[in-house]
Image (cartoon, rainbow, N blue to C red):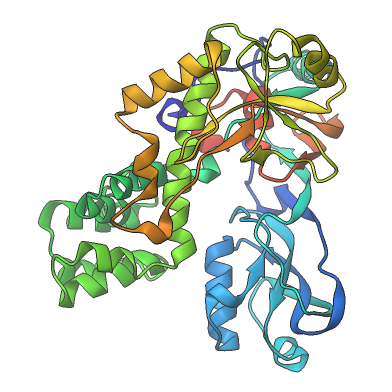
Length: 421
């Protein structure tokens, strides 16, 4: 099923060790390395929020509800997995005493200071991971072999992981494409119905009922309460039949953006997969490539880059070996800085096969959601990697820059089915 999200290849040659992550939330611990806003006597309370088994969007909604503020007014740097223990920086435009009085199960709020600046999306250096792969199927020799290969490579393909698309139901990119194509009915029904095996039985049956009957009033009676966003859409359609666009806009705006960004991520994964399948290097620039400078904040994505030509290629490849810059692939959108040469051909062919153009990302029917094109590095160094195998479980520690997915490393080690991540 990884092919469904555009990931079609491994960079490592060694046999995978199987196993499973996230049997318990404590098996997947993520700690942000943030960029802190400057302290001042401003309107925002800066706090460190640690949550267990909370997906970021749902946590933000719960915090906003309890604080009686808009969810859009809560600042955070990055989206985190649900089945995990995560620590992240957030900002709240409320009094300190009001925030102190909030009590949410499995959520701890550590108030740090006040600032005139909120926490902005993307403003972090990266994340530290502590992960346990349980029930490893491979032998000690298998574990040592794959880990040695990872250590020798020092970097991995920078795929967008399955979390970007939905772990139980990896369909967010499909919803995004329908939004882009202005087919709001299919976008909504793909999100709220569209049963996919692997989801819990109660949710699967409810989605199947709605898919087959289109009876929104009856569906609302049987949809699990935990499907908060789906129920919100269904409830709207009960009283406003056929108003697909307005129904979709019942979702938080950042969630609707995630659908579009997921489709951009799918296209990126397809482009990177094509490059690897053609046996082209991910740690070396080719003529026509666009490279991104690796600055103090470890820029993974950028609107800008340096085009590689015969005059600068040797110098650039020396810098790549020192991890001071990296080749990139397209995050397709309007005003995209295009690669040339082999990489340019790959990007063009992927878009042609998808039947998509850059200008469509201006989204004239919903211009507030327009997505500008970017470049994203195609390989990422794995820093501070430590591992220990106890004969059954593999314990890992490592650091990845912001926007990079732990599953891009884990899939190379495990080579398991998509539901194991």
